[in-house]
Image (tube, rainbow, N blue to C red; front, side):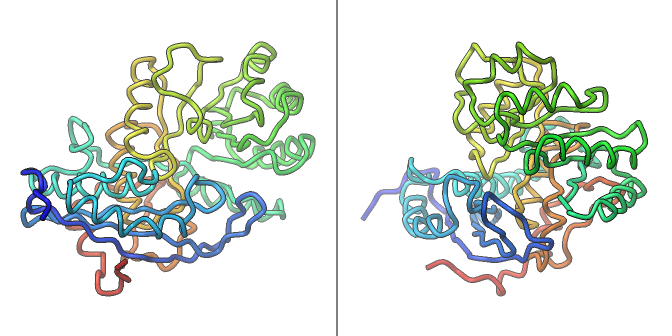
Length: 356
């Protein structure tokens, strides 16, 4: 029999499979995804429980949902015996477990999740940036923008790099005329452009309304040349997978870090948050089509790490048939405070599929 460490006694772990429908469907690389599979993790500790969400995005995360499912039994066994995940656990599983255990600890201590993550007080509302679907019909996109502005959204994110530079510029020129001048703009190229195309786009696009452009370059070795050619706010997102938060010298000072715990792992996000805080670089907590359980935690992280900065949590608006009933509601472009009881009361455990 394995002698469990003292701090593991009374701690249990369970995984559950779920799936949600995405509407509209999303395009990741060459894949069209309309159903997303994920895994909830429950931590029980001294009469308290916490939940986390482990839901990699196929085609984007380093681990697939299928590969994640294959390691959960071993992960659970390792937690039961040693109180920690195995060192090679995928990022999404590390995040799910850390947040589930964190919630159990917070509930035991009688504090909120945002306080658990370091917030000095209660943040009543977390602003959300509106993600504009890449609709082929410009009129549909204009209607969506106008509706979002009426609903209180003031920060808007657009995908670029899926068309030619000329087409992107023409399309954005038309769409931005729909919005008042006070609207803030975020752009995301997902590393689609060559150096020449990135410079061409940036030189032709007005920067006054732009918070940042995420990941413009296909090849990171072009970063120095890009920053020498143009002065434009750039954010690091998925390239954080290939960067080291222990580094001291960087090629170009980022205007923001996009922290996605499901992609990077919460442990890695914590390291990047410290890197950003030491350099006064803003962070934006961002989602990857997680369930309502995932949104509960991402909202708390945004409240603690980046109060006042609109979070990138609008992928939840694509999630249909959420496992939470009723689902979370964004009101006036903001997410209110969620309590532990708010989450527990919405989660129907009997409807989940246990992972044996």
